[in-house]
Amino acid sequence: MGIVAGLDSSPDFTRIVVCDTDTGAVLRQGYAPHPVENAESGARPADVDPQAWLLSLGEAAGGGLLEGVQAIGVSAQQNAVVPLDSQGNTVRPAMVGGDRRAQVAAADLVDALGGREAWAQAVGCVPQAAQPVTKLRWLMKTEPEAAQRTSVLLQAHDWLVWQLLGRPVRRTTDRGGASGTGYWSAATGGYRADLVELALGHQAMLPEVIGPADAAGTTPEGLLISAGTGETMAAAFGLGLGLGDAVVSLGASGSVMAVHPEALVDNTGMITSLADATGMHLPVVTTLNAVRTLRGAAEMLGLTDLESLSELAVKSTPGAHGLVLLPYLEGERTPNLPHAAGTLSGLRRESMKPEHLARAAFEGMLCGLADALDVLRGRGVEVRRIFLLGQAAELPAVQAAAPSLFGAQVVVPQPADYAAIGAARQAAWALAVSQGTLDPRTPPAWQGAAAQVLDPGEELAVGQAVRQQFVSVREQTHPGTFR
Image (cartoon, helix red, strand yellow):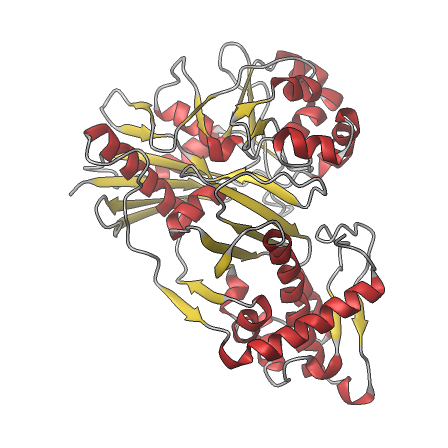
């Protein structure tokens, strides 16, 4: 038996789990928040000094948490860019999060390469405001002096691994993290340096992409550091996803991703083709409206929380007495309707009751995510089992409707930091490969997440009828959206 650690440096905190290498059992945990630079506004900063990540890491690891640990894996927030100069110093604070400043830069990049199809063919995704490649374009346009000084580009997990190893000459990343940059192709497994130049105005050094079971290096104290990866890929690894598995994530916006053996090129731009942390692929489809739909409905009905909305919704019946809500409250990305508004259809005297509107909100949100699932299924992605994540996944109204609307078994995992667990599992893999006890192609077989399993059962036909009604209203209101 050995001991490994996984750390997850999210936008708001660092969480560390120490795990048994054989079973994955969590032995102990550490936690520390990240310093909040603009606490007065309550908003998450778009620029962060990466040293804050190290301070948080040190605090989370205090009290001898890492005693006896043989290897560490690092998971960190995706889309963060740390620009370094030729001496390895930060040129400016890291650019993080859903950076709305770069929306114009995203459109600029799309046009500069010749449109959405050209980007999909080049790197498997179309530039969005949050992506590193778009942040580089924003930097060139708004801070040209900083852009000119930028010689090296790292993401959050790359930078943390580099710091843990003592800032060696060699800088590394993994294929999962690289696939979200907008200048690395999951299909070809290579960088597009020309796209870095297109965005930044000149070439920059990029970290070496190493294999899923490779070690990034060893600290002077003899602690092995694995490749690291982005939060999405680490969470998928921590959950133990395999072929046939998909994840529906319920945040303010929603996302659907699934494990697939090959990269997908989608000229419509709806699919972002990411790589995972094991050698497989994670095609992702995003919706703009998920839990924000529920919050809007709760406010309309004078309710203060989603639990009350759920209690109200379960008093209705499938189909909400004919009410259908198209939840395009912020426009929509899937389908591509950036200027659309929400639509409430089927109003009759008998359907004008609070419980029916509440039910329509849940069904509309889930049907919108079912549309995203169908985008993947339409490209040959097998979906037999769906992991449902996010706080709203615990709501009875969600659990009652999701299996029949999605047309598949739904798994609601017990809450845990699966990104940190995935990072620890990666560390265990790299450690075992270095010791010659595991094949680089075979990750450690850790115990799966404890979870509640929900089957469609006899409700499948009813749910699919509700889904068809949603599709019918969508096609009447926005014809040809998925053609």
